[in-house]
Length: 377
Image (cartoon, rainbow, N blue to C red; front, side, top):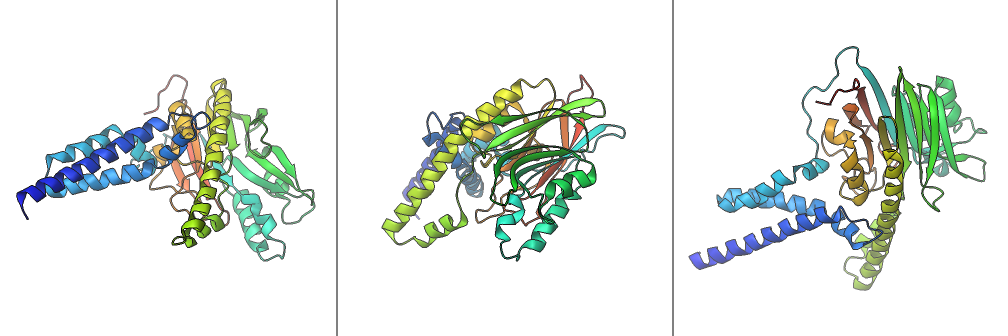
């Protein structure tokens, strides 16, 4: 191989690497841009994981070539390490608090109405009962449940009684919809600690998507817990299958692709508005906060980024691995989260993949309530 060809090849790879670096920088910039003001920013930010992964590949490429150009991807990794932590979390140190510390365990779970609407012929009844029992017997102090379903006339789906009353839990249930069987659907917080304050945050005209908050008296300290259910991605597995199956048919593929793009754009815009309403309320809280729920957005989104700039993400600080929470056809999506304020410290974060009966995996974290004036380590 001639020296000229080697030089040309190296320049091409360097230009590609520079292109990926610019892609990363543009993606990071777009995380700051509200999609309701400039919706293409949502798509560019959404593509950021691909750019970060390619940058890793260039790192290994230049290492194998023993080229000083390795400095480019390495510098990008070092400068953007907090974005890589959103992809994969590595926490090996023992974070367990000292004996006697005040702690609080919080579970967040989109229950997918306990699959009640898939139970028309009784085929999934046992799975629904298993899901209700799993939630009811979970040892968490606080249960934050989205797409919660309760039917007082049903022996199986009387979940307010099975999860709350039976275990002497306090509750705040905000009902967004009552179906034909008079079942209540909405968002709920169950707590073993007394609720001293509560409220609903409505997102404009949206009825189904909302957030609720409760002030909990935790052994003398007041902690405000939010749980939110933001605008859905509105993408079903059939939509993805239709797009894949249309590969090779240009007209059908373009049609399905445009359909997916429209739904993504609608979601980006709605959630960017909703997170701003939520944050406005959080900023006014007089107490330490824990914010959890189904964000329906990945860590590379305006929604997640706005929360991460003001609060700490429990998975990043205390989780391990990829932490995917979506139990569907798109792998590696982490769309359920817990965030918390500086007066707390997270440890023992778990993504409960053993509970695979919903389209979301539950997540739980334990929190140490730091003494007043103390700073997290």
